[in-house]
Amino acid sequence: MAPVTRGFRSRGQERDPRLPPGQYDTQGEWPVLTAEVTPNLRPERWTMSVDGLVDRPSSWSWDEMHALPQSTWSGDIHCVTTWSKLETSFEGVSVDLLLDAAGVQPEAAYVLATSTTGYTTNLPLDDVTGGKAWVVWSNEGRPLSPDHGGPVRLLVPHLYFWKSAKWVTRLTLLEHDRQGFWERNGYHDRGDPWSEQRYQGD
Ligand SMILES: Nc1nc2c(c(=O)[nH]1)N[C@H]1C(S)=C(S)[C@@H](COP(=O)(O)O)O[C@H]1N2
Ligand SMILES: [Mo]
Image (cartoon, rainbow, N blue to C red; front, side, top):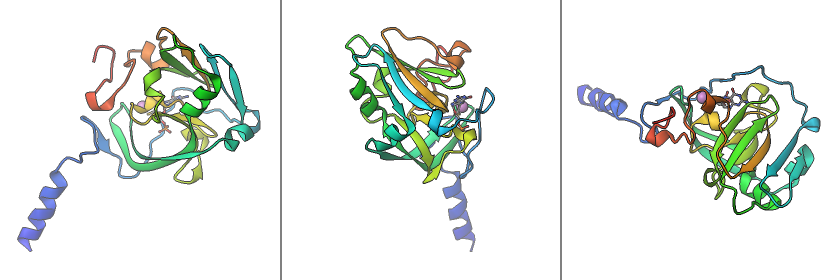
């Protein structure tokens, strides 16, 4: 029995390659991190808008969003407070679709995402295009709960999860970066977990 036990132990000590540096696995749990009061949002009254440096400022109602081609993303999410949730999935629409419909102007290089609550977060345009970002309304096949951003949140899973604005309602295309809520409070403008871009200057 001893060799078997040792085998298990050493396997348990190996670092999971899916975990970026400084992160731990929540083992399936999904913590809630909310800076503001969770809004009670009725889907019928929610809209998604794309504005700023676009040819056609555009808005989608709940029904219009659901009429767009949908995608499912599966993978891992990483919060800057060091938790990672591995192997989860979300359903929604690609941000590429929304930006293409609005027609992004050539000077646009950044995006500011805004929530119905006033929460904001800034992202390089390159980080929300090319199949890297979605507007999602369900997780593992179930509607997003209000705590997790329901009815609708942004999903930018390759960056720290504060970039994935809950209750997202607007994407504004900008020529110059404009800091959002956490970024003004010292968090990184990009937030790549694999290079540990946690704070300004990292
Ligand atoms: N509107 C809004 N979006 C937000 C936040 C927030 O406080 N308000 N927290 C961010 C942070 S720090 C993280 S880790 C994730 C947490 O999402 P969850 O509560 O669904 O885990 O949402 C991000 N989006
Ligand atoms: Mo976070």
